Length: 385
Image 1: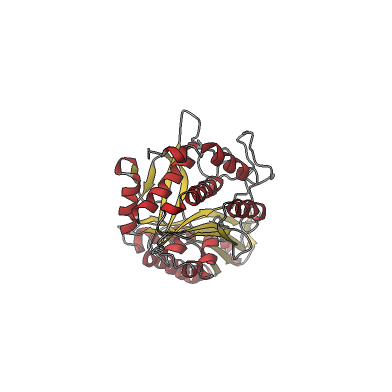
Image 2: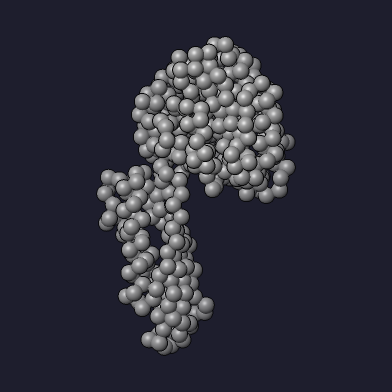
């Protein structure tokens, strides 16, 4: 575990209170108004230069260094999930139907704690620091809006770092990897239209259900037959709906799925095969197919040089080099513009019962890791001075 310095340890009660206050007020993406007000008030009380996020929620805070040769950005996501909380903690969500089930309250509390620490030690900080409190990571993707608004250019940001609490890694361990770490992702809907008929006279219809079944089979061959076997990719049909009654030839069918890959070329290959299959396969069944694709977040790809810096910041004994993950994160939009690194902070603690996965209605963590997060952020800062 990363060694936490005394003056950060002394912040524990304060940081825990901040986290619990945030945990009580979970809000969905682009509706984080109360959360944003809390963040801005906190930062302004520190005397920082603060502006409200360009989407109307979230916040940007800037701290000028003594030399200001570089600007290092840190990002925390602030939105919550539409989940009913079942943790039974005293600081449980006060907003029915919403919960910080993905640890964003912890991310925000960590970055606020780091901002507090940085202001206190500003005279010893050489480089400029930018604190990004980003809305809508869970959707529709607040990072893209921030990049498109020119925030990184406005503050001349050189590098950006982001952290995610992660219960699949032991508590206090920093988990990361150079290069591709999280997948590019997209969603798609397929509508197949045929012609309904009586099940006893199938020749008078065009079976949309049979076409859909063939579509599932065909699409499951895309990764195995069209993608380089050394390149990871996923194409999954997760939902299929068709048919009215047992003795009726289905006139319509709907398929819903997702696709994921770690580089643009592989993603494009999967996407193009999907398009061609939906366009041509239904014709052989005398049906038609319509496809809607929603390309979502790019792949999270960690800068190789920043990974080496991160390794020094946390210490090799405290670092777990993880395999690429097919989950996604909109931190990737920052990395499309500037060098960036995203890492996981382990929160798994079997003895204390912190074993529930992200997005679980019982997800929680030992708040000691918030201090570890602050220390890692500060250790990263020191590597550039």
